View 1 (spheres, rainbow, N blue to C red):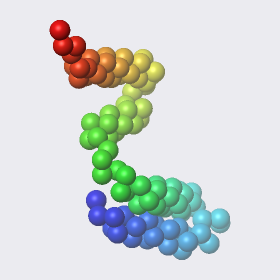
View 2: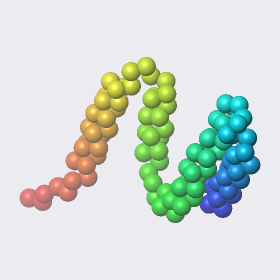
View 3: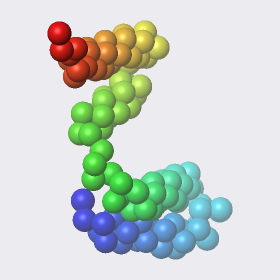
Length: 107
């Protein structure tokens, strides 16, 4: 994503939260939820904006795994077992990849 766009989205979310602030204290739960969501997502977008240069070298497969874990935590009733299985699979794949790259001794 374009870094200035991320910054603009963060600023707009903070401005929206500032506009909702007077209504959030006395307002309905929907206004309070929208206020809280604007603050939380605004903070997240600000952090992504700050980290954007470092994220360009981030492996795509790790992002996919993080997304899958978050989705699983939201969907699966008992995520602990599934997380353990996922962790074991990742460790096995990582060790296999490490062994495949290990330099072979020349005889």
